[in-house]
Image (cartoon, rainbow, N blue to C red; front, side, top):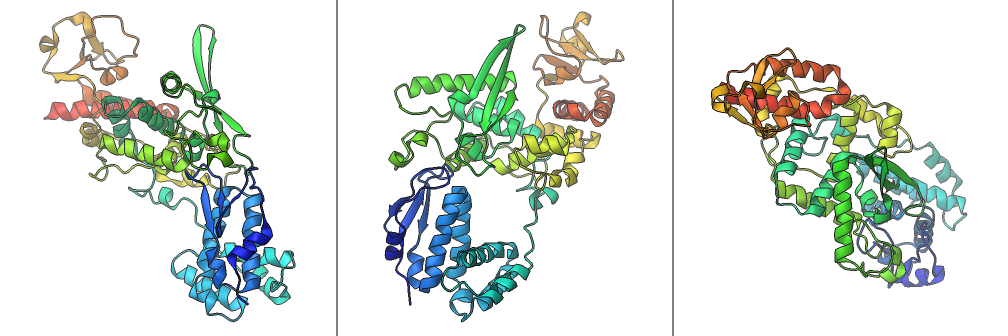
Length: 483
C-alpha cells in the first residue's frame, strides 16, 4: 500500500523543534528554523508518495524525532541522507530491507562514502525500538547491530596540506594579512569580518549568532580591555544558551566598537535583539522566529566573507594562483597556528570550542603546523608576500646622513636609518622592517640578521606568528639588495 504525504503530515499535526521554535507546515513540507540558511530548512516529503506505507510512516516519524531532539542542521543532514537512500534503485528494487541496505552499502563504498550508511542503520534500529509496523524483524535488527561501518576520516584536507582546501601556508597567511592592511577596497564591516575569522577561527554560525550585547569593553589600571562572548554551537541546545569568552586585541576591539556605532546609525529603530552583523531586510517568515529576524544567516556570513576575500586578489606564493580562502580554511589555519605556538590538546579543544579531542588531534599530525619559514623561503617568497613597509636605499648618505638615526642589530651592526624624526613606540630592529619610515641600506648585513631572526623563530614557538611577518620582510629586503 502506497503512502500519501499530505495525509501522513495531517496525522502528525503541529510540533516544535529542539530549539523551541514551531515547525511550519507548507503543503507537503516542513520548514524548520535555522540560522544556517536565510529561510530555514525545508523538508519536502513528496517522496513519501512513492514509498511503502509502513516505510513512509517510519521515515516521517524518525525525521520528526530528529527535529525535536537534535539541531536543525543535524536533522536536515539525516533527512538528506535518508532521502538519497529511499529514492535509490537499491531501495526500490529490493524485496527485503537487508538486501536493500547491503546494496546501498556497496553503492556508498564505490563513491568512498560508506560511513554514511549509519544514517540508514540508525533509522531502522530506531523504528525497531519504537515497535513500528514493518520494523519488527529480529533477524534484521541483529544483522544491523553486527554491521561494520567505517568512520569518516577526519581532517583529510589538513593532513594532505591540500593547497586549495587545507590550512593556509605561513607565507599565504602573511600575504593575506598584508593585503588586508594595505587594501582599501573593503568596507569597514568586511574588514571586521575577515579579521574576526583570521584571529579566532569561528564557524560561520558562531558569527551569525553574535549580538552587540556580546561585546564588552572595560578599563583597568589605565588600560582598555576588550572581550567577546561567542555563542557556542557544538551543544545540541537552543541558540545562545552557552558562550565562550574570548579576549580581543585592541585593533579588533576597536573594529567591533565602530561596527556597533554604524549599526545604531543605520538601524536605530529596528525592534528585537540587535545582531552584530545585520541583515539588510528582515528574515522571511520572521513571525515564526522573530528573535533572529535581523540576523544574517550562516550562509550569508560565509558568502560575505568569501566575496570580501576575493576582492583582495591575493596571489598565493605557494601555487602562483589566486588564493582561495573560505571560513573552513581560516579555521584550519587558526588551529595549525595555535599548534605552532605550542598549544596543548586541551587548549586547542577549548579555543576551537569542541567537546572532545577527536577532531583536533589531526592538527598535531599536520606537518605545516610544525614548520617554520627558512631562509630560502623568506628570500623567495618575501617579495611576493610584500611585508617590507619601508624603502631600500643605497647607503646612509642617500638616507640623509644622520648617524643618530641609525638602526642597529642587537650586536650593534648598522642596518639602516629611521626616517620618523620623532620618538618611536616600536621595538627595533625587527619591527623596523614593518615600518614605512625605515630606510634599509643596500650594503647592510640584512642576510646575517635574517639568519639570526630565523634562529629565534625556531626556538620561540609562541612568537612565531609575529616573527613570520618580520622574517618575510627581511627576506624581501635581502632579495631587493641582491637585485
